[in-house]
Length: 447
Ligand SMILES: [Zn+2]
Image 1: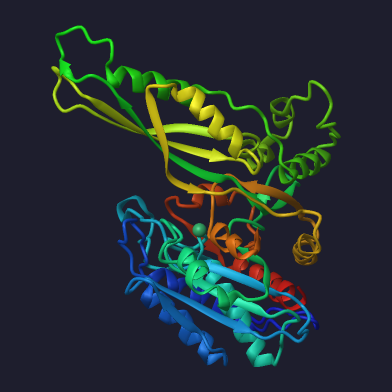
Image 2 (image 1 turned 30 degrees about the vertical axis):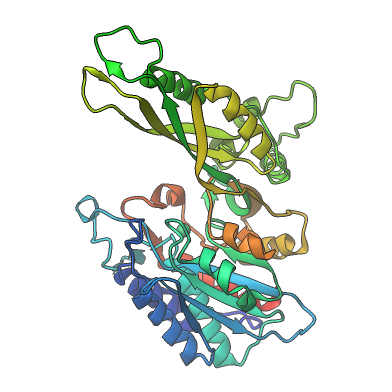
């Protein structure tokens, strides 16, 4: 049955249908990224490039490494004085263990109005919705106001070295004029209570600080006195790091998130009052607290340990890895604190590092993103939030592109988006895709 489309929308039934078909078919193209270069996005890149070309666009395929393919295309806008807008989505997915799933993770099965499979929400759904929208524009003769640059990337789920990092380093010209970007991890329905559907739009990301720690000591026989044991020294350091209570650092995005979420709960806190206790406030926000709690401070979790080779031999050194995350503006504090917590006998270095991002929430772009959601779900409450982890937006930020997490999905009560993200039985309702197509069509045309 045909669904009604408003007179000012260019979405037709074909666009709605294609968002489902493309999501399903992209899921069937297994682009599992196991890290270390073990991935091949090329078949998925060719799939999207063919469908862009059929809509009259001229997609460019770009590879740093054979098989690790990125696709970039530009749609010229009607207002040549307007800045360009980047829409990016990654083509790779995290691994899935078929034995754990209700349906095969690469089946792309559509069952009872739901598309199942790895990538259904992260993020072949968005890849498919964007494709469906630009093809609808071609059929209807619609052109957006701003130039729209579409980028489908490889390698987001690992280092981004073959994906957005490569594009930012080597093909910056393709993104000329882009000032803002939208991509994954925002604008999904988060049910914070029986009548409290939220749409968190990401306006910031914590930075990544994966650390390698090395303790050097005196090697020797396990039966001898040894006051310079590398294992003991390292163990003390990582215990301090793991138990460290990082102080609260409220960034502008997190302050806005706290203020808006509190207001929805009838609370009007003074975040600058002496003695303001963010944990106390979070305790009053119910399920919504989880949108903010991971981003009010830096964090540091020891995750890997390596030392020794025989029970009666004291090794000369020991190493550990720590997953650290830094809030925007929290980098200096992170450095100084790590120097202090590791102490003089343990060296630390960045194993992998990405800067935090901060996007303004009082910008015209954020206002338009907010309005696009509210137009199609008037009962929904848009709130800004900061992502606890990172996305390709970090790489594109090096080109001066301000990134927002905006991959719209209207989800029913009980549908736990965040549990399905990288989770078992990842899936997306057909109706959620239809909503996303309508929102993206409206936003991208009028941005
Ligand atoms: Zn993703």
